[in-house]
Image 1 (cartoon, helix red, strand yellow):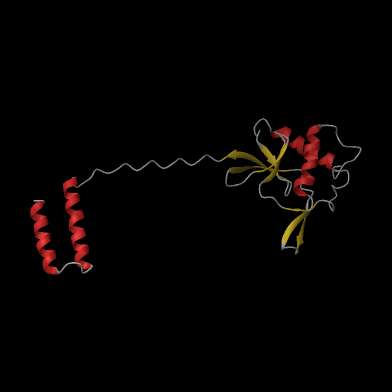
Image 2 (cartoon, helix red, strand yellow):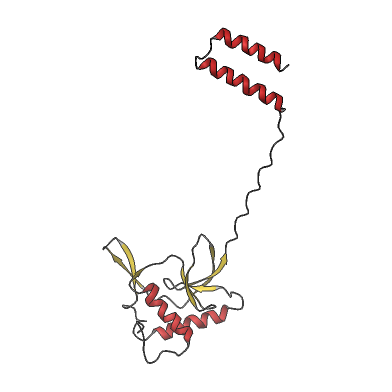
Length: 184
């Protein structure tokens, strides 16, 4: 049985979604960032700010019936308590009607409007555009022909052998001169 069921409840299935969302998402729970009621789709959703823009269009009604409570266990946090509000016990149908009425006033210009149950504000949702991928770097033309690359590779190998103590300085100089002669 739903948490706030009364005999005055509307028969509308959209109201049932609104009512059930309160017990699923809000009553005695921590706040879900991005949680909103979307009257256009008749769904509760937690839209993440990283993927959605919440565009404020200046409407804050009806006010939120939620009261914030500081809890210490199991960790310090705020929880939202709806039961201590004057909207509790049979007032949920009235809240649903108020939210629906506000949406109906703005839906022509703001069809993606969503209501925040924590503060009563409305926002228009817009998906953030996906970032344009960076273009692949264009390979730069090789400034050295393959023959020069091979010379530099072999000269570096020769120098590394000398630094590692595998050949003497005299042997290094002789081989380097021979390498230069070979590639000139």
